[in-house]
Length: 234
Image (cartoon, helix red, strand yellow):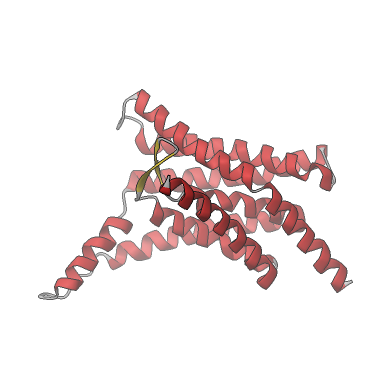
């Protein structure tokens, strides 16, 4: 039960940090969250835990919140700002992977046990596994671009704040389905048998689906912040 309570606390913390970033820094606070989410997710993902009776990796929450942010950007500032945030996240992920793997090529200080331990720990987290890296980058780019596209398709069909929850959930849940499917197939095809692949996919998507369903009040909260700030500026 401890893991589940901590997971829910982490879920709330992510949502509140996004709202706080928006209130403090406006649009750029949201854009700033995208690289935070993709980098933190790729660090947390190495930790495997048991949640709701299922084996799962951490990182699902913070990564899934990137879809919340692009939906808020799409709603309040338009498609182009959301796309800009996606490419900033993509650039950040590539930069982190490159710079940290270059850092791992350095030889630790001889005779310094702490340096050796730190190098091994850093290597565990950041060492480049080409297949995982390709899976992560491909899934991120395809799913995020679909999310922005789908959000505006649904916005044109169901405009107005009354249907904000609908376009937020429809775009995000399908996009996260694409993300989970692409990542699992590229990363683990041929590594695990079909039943294991299916379990990994279901677990990953289930947790992201919970995040998508839970973020709706925060989309409306962000919408209210935008309207209030716009009224003040006018």
